[in-house]
Length: 186
Image 1 (cartoon, rainbow, N blue to C red):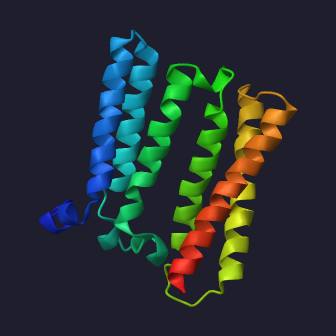
Image 2 (spheres, helix red, strand yellow):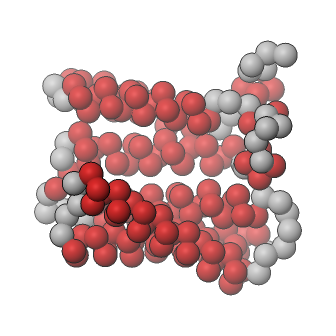
């Protein structure tokens, strides 16, 4: 059997492909600004995102059923997260006097929360909204704390205020996504 069939290609998210095109354009933009390392980093991220979305997970029986049934519409989330955060690294927007870091944490938390809740609801069993929202909030808190530990280990961390606000915003983003998806699932 072929690695990718026509049916596999038809299942792919058009939004994800469009976001990949934007990612390639961002890499070219960084290259034009003489930000060669940022440009190459974005290209490596693009290849990583392709590795996440391109495999025909619906046919990959070694994957858990929840992952195989994840809606293809969510394939754009890792690409959007990369698009959102790349200017922060490539143009140093994370370190300026602006709300960029906060926006990235809020929206990245929402995107990760959407994928988490979709995985949670993938088996089709009924969940009460409150439990889905609580699970989304717990996931956001865990994700935010884990990221801040990573920042501390790698030396990316700001001050104490930056750390706790990043955790709160990541948690808030995941919680809002859980609220929206829990209401849609009712």
